[in-house]
Length: 143
Image 1 (cartoon, rainbow, N blue to C red):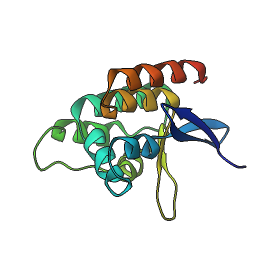
Image 2: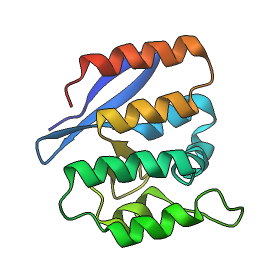
Image 3: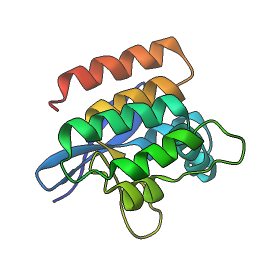
Image 4: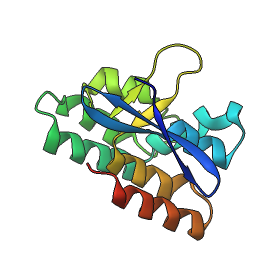
């Protein structure tokens, strides 16, 4: 199935389906903030922050019965420390997370469920107008 695209502030964002769930490409959002080559860095910085990890962990606790809470606690304790790094792939692998996924191949775009993508957009989008546009867009997408 060919992924759908939406446009927010003239930026095309991919929407993919996996296991009957919709996922929004947070890599596309990160590319809008910085160059394509730096999108992975933007996402890594987002995912390693304490507030992001707490949001993702809370979402997984609510919707994922196979979520590895002990691993989550390990990440949460290290979040915000200067030497702490975390990629979306590591998060998924270590915690058995289902709210994010990474497509294999090159490039490897990261995808998020709409509620996680909304939080991502508020963290990586630089202008209030763009954040408002993203919030309006996510309100139309079913969770």
